[in-house]
Length: 143
Ligand code: IDP
Ligand code: MG
Image (cartoon, rainbow, N blue to C red):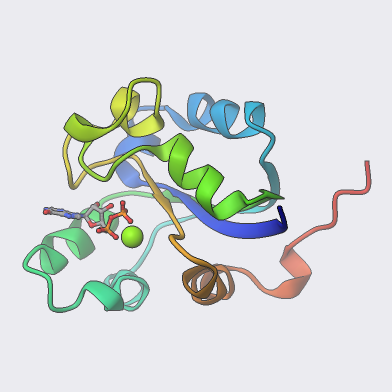
């Protein structure tokens, strides 16, 4: 077990439905600590860069469009095995395949508008966290 940091995003659909609090409650209840957070409305360029890994996928254009439809809440979560833990709490990409009780099963409306993003590996987290946060914006939990 190792303490890790991972990037979480509450996507425009979930922000628009006022599901921020319910989603954060699930993350905190599982022992993930928020060590950085900011709300922002992604530009087309930011969304394109963030999802550049999916550039060749057929859904890339729609994904970029969706992610710019409204504000998002970007967060750094910290905890034991935070990357995998967060992915488990999120559930499968397609809400119809997401396990009961996961965030996507309960808050996502489609495979595209699926409420949350989470880094899928240490390498991905290493790109995604600095994409949104400077070192100074990531805080130590002192109590
Ligand atoms: P993940 O978010 O579970 O890691 P990825 O495969 O990395 O899933 O895809 C990134 C995002 O792209 C998804 O969360 C979803 O919003 C969108 N997406 C993935 N697959 C599809 C699809 O088949 N159609 C439309 N959008 C998709
Ligand atoms: Mg992914």
